[in-house]
Image (spheres, rainbow, N blue to C red):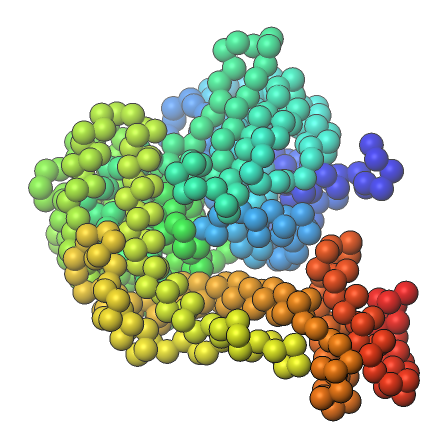
Length: 556
């Protein structure tokens, strides 16, 4: 190992920890092991992991189950390589430093030596990174070896992961894991939208085991079954509306919630979402309180008790049992009210009184019907349809935001970086009228103006504007650096400026230099510009400027 890398340093670039959760007759679900041993988890996080690691309503069938969940973090620190990775990933990557993802492999099998008659245990990988294809495969591989060889398999897996190179986008990486070589390419922000699926391409190889199977999370099948409601659900998620999803098991809830979150790509969802949630979660009381407005969160649950506990929520999607007959035309339309009252035997369907702003596009269902049963084709159809819908929605906003930026010719080296004009809803809506709305690019008709008015008041708009404002600020800084590098600071130019203006100029250049990584051409050009300015001013001003310690260090 390289001398400057601490033990578990590379491991923590990828994972927070690996947990083993077991069922104890006296304690219930309990944490049996945490690797590495010094991984920090608060008591609340430990309790949440214990309850979320097991299916909430479990049958007596012997089986293995894979799913994932998401919990709030007590400490929201992010490693520098993780921040760099997220910055270079597609903008829709559902990353939030305040949350941890848990990737679960749950095993239940009959065991006559246990009083309850069943062996129940889960392997849980905790990470701040939402890398579903990779971590589902890693979790399944570690679980396979753990159930054969015990804790030694987890310890070996941790040491293998501690040799992995840091997360990087846009190139294929290979990682050793328990006799397997994982080949993985994580998507980059510069990828074309259709070049990646979900969160990247993952393959496993093992010369000794030709039957080795890659576990791929199926985020397509559950959402395809609700194709007739997807455009309405897209509006609900876009506007940050509370949405409760009740499904038979955590595998379906987690897949369905994650698929619905993905409908907004390339827009990143800002509101909270929980792929799998139980009544034991620390936020249950907060989310079930009827004394306040329902929180703007998407909840995936399996316990039918939630139908009564959250009967004040405005939008509920009840998913049919696996293998059950899905109704005909009545299932294609949202139900405004429950058939009688919200009872535990509520029939499947979408229950909402929300009136969509857009007319239903029936072409998606027709395309999926023609696709056969190919998951890859269905995924591509869904991804392309909603990507085009979201992009069509965002294009007028991006166009208007660009119009708020100052022109390059307005930049002067002797002035500060100009700021963008504030976003005005009235001006934006007027620009939509002038340039034509999203229906020109996606063909979907409806009250786009009304949808924009609602969107601008929700947190997803605030998140988008905040992120794009940072991008615009960085762009303006880059243009300003170009203006500074190309300016001619000859003696004749400087002689027309007051000393105060020259001091401000040098301090602004110094500020830009400190922001730019060393050994870059832009930094070297700025340093040369400072040297040129110093050589073209009188000695008194030069002495004053050189009294600045950081400037002397830059020029040293």
